[in-house]
Image (cartoon, rainbow, N blue to C red; front, side, top):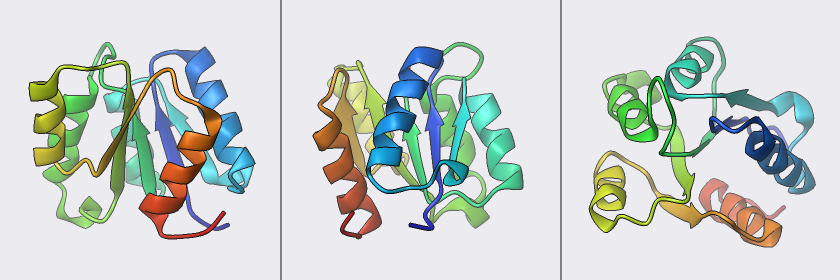
Length: 127
């Protein structure tokens, strides 16, 4: 599959686990990018077209909500799909993420199959 995915999480271990599931979903390793916070993610988006961002909310430097606000200031990136993958359960905060353009949420911890199905749904493909 030629879709490009950006995994944004401050935990190296969780990024690795999410990347493994994304690979199992059929996306090649060279199409999976990672960032440890929102600021790093924005830097990746300046150099690589990304189809899907799997975004944690609670991160240092620039959290997921700040990242989403900055992302939406860039019209050329309005087509980038954002899915929140987080332990966050605060309804108001999640509602703000939807207002900022997030299209789905997946609560950690999650089953690998759930992430695969979510990728299929968001990208509109059968993996």
